[in-house]
Length: 182
Image (cartoon, rainbow, N blue to C red):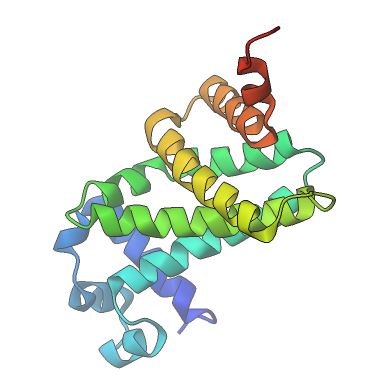
């Protein structure tokens, strides 16, 4: 048995998702693919959605750690956008399932956690109240999730353009540029 059983199970679910629709995958099929007992599965996870949620959080935690080491907000967002582009097929498969609303909610929650970590590091001297920051993070999480689902493509130019747009939105630059000049 591998050292990290949770990751082992998640990797097998991701492999199954590349071949099958989410609604066609059962815990029984997953444990057979992993060659583990149902008891082992349920020791680590409640259900398949729990595995997906854990996987998303793990991926975004890794992305956040890389992003926090980035030299700029644009470099940090670029790391995130390229990770989303790499996992685009998997995300699409999840969102094409009858559980779309649940999958979107998981993505938005995970993105909000990512942005919280990024904003805490990038906005140390922010004058935002805690309530305003929560509202901003909520708004940005929904908006960026929508942008990623609609605009994120595998080609590097598309990723660069999307990264710049997200950075301009997060920094307020796009809003400032959109104001009418007096």
